[in-house]
Image: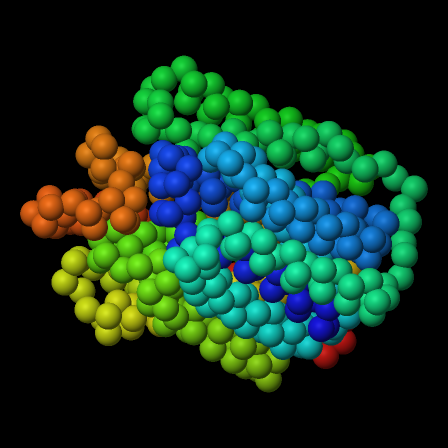
Length: 469
């Protein structure tokens, strides 16, 4: 468990460490128009990698793949640190995401292999606390390094952490090796990669780079539909499908998967745009904006850790997850009311409510899937949850980035926090108002998204957890 926690922290840290550094990065590398791709590229490739890692681990065992994922992630981090252009950084973030996808799915699957359903709730709550701790450390470390050293060190810091994680996992993680006589479903992996890419480009370019009625956008939409149909046909014919379609016959699998997509969209949207609101609209520094996010991350740690303990005691999780979705939805609506005059106490209270809601949802949705899935499909089922999180992160954040860009006047999107502060007072105030309106326009979507998730979860079967697997 110690080795799993280290590697999970490694992957989770890199999802948030970039947030407070993004305005500085895009200003130095001259790529604000590609801002959302710093998040999207990482989420896209991690989403593509997770089904493959999960299924391969079901077939051949988890240990070797787990160690390989750590190595890939560390190499990707080193490449990100030496990037000289926005294009290079996005490409290296994509490479880094492959390793991160493997770490996420294999950590959760290995933990599920080692625990009974009720023990899983405690472990998943602990993992949720690790996510929350990484979420706190990420913006703080990212902001401090960006402001006082260089944004490149937000990637270099992964190198010693990765070395420790690799050494610990290699030394103490002992898992049985398994083999399967069947072929790897490479066709299914290729089709799902193409589908997610089409959806991401559609959400990122639609209404911004290209009009919704343009041939490019229509072609991406048609391509996504075609690839989805081909994927279903391929999975039905495959001996070892990368995502067994029979899993979708269960509401205990399908509803959490859909909800994870919605939750990831809202969560990563808020994690991406809250630091931007604090820096571009409120004038906070990179390090200060990381500190101002502490209420959000603190709420996530408390809810995840205590939520896991509560589920272990009660043996049920459904209504706890529904309540979390409602809290997150209300917080999104409250974020949409913020303006330049919103005080730190009010915004902090909104963040606590959001953190409590998201914290109690994330790991318990995974628990719902793992508990109701046969052990032979556990890797594939866990990877489906991680893939759904990647879809929400890649497609959802791209769509929200389009909403943000559409709310700004020409030229404003190229401004960095330092450039905004250097403007004459009257112009600066008007520009900050414009950024505030554009970002709260993004938040206006996150609230209804999470309330829709709460409605869906009301139909989730109320399963009682067993003390035995």
